[in-house]
Structures are given as C-alpha cells and as structure tokens.
Amino acid sequence: MLLPFSFLYWLGVELRNWFFDIGVLPTTGVAVPVISIGNLSTGGTGKTPLTEYVGEILILRKKKVAILSRGYGRKTSGYLLVSDGSGMIATVEDAGDEPFQIARRLQAASVIVHENRVKGAQRAIEELKPDVLVLDDGFQHRYLGRNVNAVLVTAEEITTTQFLLPAGNRREPLRSLRRADVIVVTKCRDLQHFETARKILQARVSVPISGFRLLPYGLRKASSNELVNRQAVNGKTAITFSGIGSPGSLRSSAEEFGLSVVKNFQYADHHWYSAEDLRSLRSAYEAAKPDFVVTTAKDIVRMSQKTQVHTDFLTKTPVYVLEVRPSFLSGEDVLIDLLDRVAA
Image (tube, rainbow, N blue to C red; front, side, top):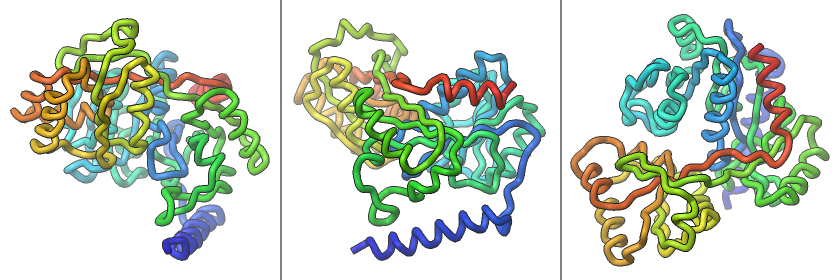
C-alpha cells in the first residue's frame, strides 16, 4: 500500500538531485578537505564504525581532524562543540548519542554538531583550524561540498529487493551511487557474499568498491572499562539489548564472539532507556542469571546520563559493551589511498 508513496518520494529525490547537478541548488565549498561518510538507507550500515576508522587513519597521519555531525536526537539545536580534541565538553543529551560516542572513541579529534552542515563546517574551520573535516552521514547533505564521497551499502540491500521510503528504508535509489568516490559494502558474511554484491554493483556503476564486516573483538565492562579476553567468554550465557539501526546485529555479533544468547531485547534506534526499561532488563537478568548482559557502545553512551537509576543498574548488573571494528575483506587500500590523496 505504501509503494505509490515511495514513487512520489523517488520523484522528489530525483528532482532534488537534478537541481544540485545543474546548479539550481547551491553547493558550498570550504577551506579544508571534506570527507563525507554516508549511506543510501536510514541506518544500520556501520556508518559510525567507518567514521571512527577514517578518523583514526587521519590521526595516525598526524592530521588535525574535526568531525561534523547532525546530532540526531539531541536536546539542543545550532552549533555545539562536543569535544575539542583534549576532552569532552557537552553531555550525551546535548550532543546526541553518535557524536558523543565518536568523541569518546577519537579523543584526539574535535567533534561538532550542527543541523546546518555548511554553517557548522564554516564555524568549525574558523574556530578549530582543522586540517581535514569528516562529515558524518553526509551523502544526502549536498549543500556542503566534499572531496571524497564514501557511501556504505549493506550486502543484503544489494542482493535483495529494497524499496525507497516509506515502503522501505532506502533514502535514495542505487543509481545515486554514481556520485560516490568509493562504495563500501558492509555486513558481508564472508568474501563470497561480498563478491556477489560487488558483481551486482559493477553492473550498475563504475566506482571503486571496498567491503568489510564488523568483527567483534572484546567485551568491556561498562562500570570499570575492564576488558575481558575472548577465551574467557566462550560458551558463556548472555542477555543482549540494543537500540540501533540494525536490531539483530548485536545478537549475531555476540554469538560470533562465542556467547550463548538466552534472551535478546530490541528497542528503536537511538532509544533512551527509561527506569521501566531498566527494571525489565534487571528482572530478565535475575530470572535467567546469565554470565553477561551485553549491549553496544552506542547504547551505553545513552545510559551515561548519571541519573541514580542508570548508575544503580550499571553498578548492580554485569553490563558489558561488545567492541567491534571494521575488518576489510577487500579494497581497504582503495579507501586509504583516497584519504591519503585528499589529506596530503
């Protein structure tokens, strides 16, 4: 029933992109190189881990990095400095969960949020003097010029039929990938899964293609940051809970890590945990008595509000964060070469 509305949405997207292509809608360049990390769908592609990966590569090359995000779900508006590269300045409620998570992970980078990407970039460049600007979730935000368009698509959305909003969760059709400088295929089960997706893409666009899967590599205790060795968790039981764009991915990653998941709680993306949510999770823990209660890095920052309810839950319950990182199956050199050329 929603397909006619998806057709109307497609018309609007095509018209908007055409206006940008012919210059009716303006694109504003800025004084430093801009690397955009984006996707075709509404979420769940691994965009935040790739943003962190790109930031780490640039920092290792001694670049002063600023990361600009919209700050989805935050309680503020306008320009906000989340981190200045030497410490956190904003709270998770004011910054939004993803920028706050990125700032905690990339402590040497500045992180800024602004719903107007052009104004945010201009002010960040003026005040922070970065060598390079990384634009988080920037593919559709064409008002700000960019030197690199890295676009993520999951292997599943390439190998199966997907619809545009509102019938599906795709924001743009596959043909929009022609604007990309590199396509990054994510959530590949293995190399064969990646190769299947790559062949489909190569028949549609002439763009370099990389591919990775998110590899779970460690459990970190939320209350103490203590890391647990993988061998110590093999075969142990766990309850998992998450509010992310790809609801089933945490359970899959936990099982790949060696945990036996006895119950999985799934919430909406960017979900803020209430006292009732925490009571339900605590009750499930007391009933099942698992060895671990496991969540994601993005979820744990939404629980760092320092209210007594959240503090009590994290203190009394063995909550652990499953750490993941991109593990490239193919084309990592293509992405790194792009970064090196732009940020040289």
